Amino acid sequence: MRLRVFSLYVRLTPLSDTILPPVSSKVLKNMIEKGVILSSMKPLIESRAKLKPIFISNLGISENKRLFSTGNKELVVKAGKTLYGRIGAVFDGNMENVFSDTSEIETPYGKFRYEIDRLEFTEIGSKLNISKDSNIKITFMTPTLLSSKMYLPPSLADKYKEIDVGFSLLPTPGLIAAAAYRTYYGAIGNANKPEVNTRAFKLNVLVNSFTRVINYELKPVTIVLGNDEKGNLRKSRGVIGWIEFDIVHDKFRDALLKYLNVARFLGIGRSRGIGLGEISIVGTRKIQSS
Amino acid sequence: MRLRVFSLYVRLTPLSDTILPPVSSKVLKNMIEKGVILSSMKPLIESRAKLKPIFISNLGISENKRLFSTGNKELVVKAGKTLYGRIGAVFDGNMENVFSDTSEIETPYGKFRYEIDRLEFTEIGSKLNISKDSNIKITFMTPTLLSSKMYLPPSLADKYKEIDVGFSLLPTPGLIAAAAYRTYYGAIGNANKPEVNTRAFKLNVLVNSFTRVINYELKPVTIVLGNDEKGNLRKSRGVIGWIEFDIVHDKFRDALLKYLNVARFLGIGRSRGIGLGEISIVGTRKIQSS
Image 1 (cartoon, each protein chain N blue to C red):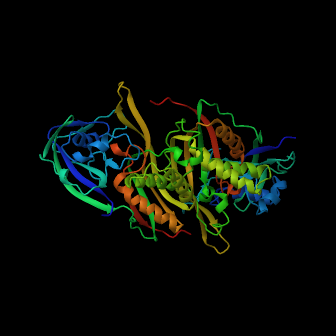
Image 2: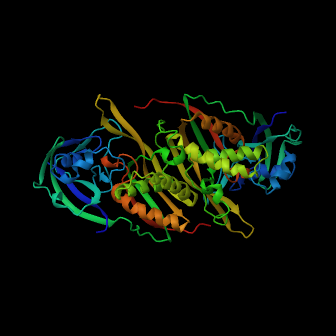
Image 3: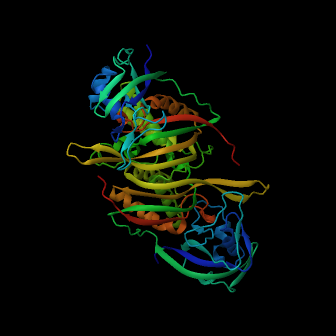
């Protein structure tokens, strides 16, 4: 069987007024941890492996408008208001636990009605279908954390492994490509091979070399991740918005579309397991400029 | 004598209502071309050499607010309204022609009163003074054109020299560093040495690797450059706004501050000779994040 990834789209409706956690993906995560839905994914969620091939979205007021906290304002949701969520993972052929035994699920954030909307699949290795007369537009639906270290040549990685640089916040097409490539390799189970870093680095450099940026609306945002064990507020800083670009080199364009095809299910960058780095991708018509 | 660059800050006041050209730097450029001011720079302006060490600003309603056309709206200026301009170049010890013989100068855009405000200097090779407990904030006062090809490894430059990629529009700190380095080498007269491209490439990759981006407000803009010989409207697309970042590697931070020290006089990227890529640089206090 060919390797596939899937997205399970669900609806959650709180039965009473509720305050969501700052990272609202915790509601779905809690359901998996308790074994009520997708219990086969529990070990993956608890694992500390890198590039884990799982994505648990934040809840949204629609499939594209996710809820997450950027400050002190609480995420209050009224009883009966439908919220939308998504879980992305590698498809192992076993879907038995997708359907919960019960349609009402108890969580630390209150009781929710749980409904499945649909399952979407794609084959890993197939290319996202955006024709060459279109630009590529990528929307960052949730804060996306792209490490500056993805620019570092792998030959220097050991020398500087103790330095914590942080995030770039400027999602260059090269950085997006490197991150999508890492997601892709996480999905096919080869994330720890040393050549992955070498290829990701080359992809980063060369995609940036051959890309004309057309337009963007990007905004750095601070996201509240909740409290750590000591009770300190944990935050991170990522980017939301969109970027539209054109890659003038067919080989790298095709490579990017192959990796993006997986990344639209599993996200890009850090903390995809809690719903950061969720992206959507469309082709946009090229306008001839003078 | 140590090599220096200078900025000549001038004030131009139109004696009657006027419509400025879409790229308002043409007013100052016309005065130099006619030999009324800074006539020693005429050959440099007319030369087609790369990385020419000259910057002629667009005119501004202040020294920081430049006027340029992003569409069909004309740049109308009332009689008596003071406009601010700047010319940056390498200082050759000869300043005799700074002071125009006449204080009223005729141009194709009307007659202007010409006054000198001040001259500023810096030594090439000295470092912009921003302490390590500050972040670096760079403001793009006019559309800045940073070529995507600055990401291309020099070993591949020949292979792809026919491909016109275009501009990146995302001013990553690495791309800024590579562009400022090229400006610097233009100023010391070594712009055509092959190692300049190699070093610019390494600087691009490594500055990006060691930089945490803190914040930005950036906006792609289309700028009208006027008509070409055939009467077609020429446009280009660059970025304006600001970016604030921190470089965690002292060696690259110091290198960047050395190149930026020249770039604040001569600009970065393409079309500096007509006032694009004008930047200002300040240190901003670091805020401890949790």
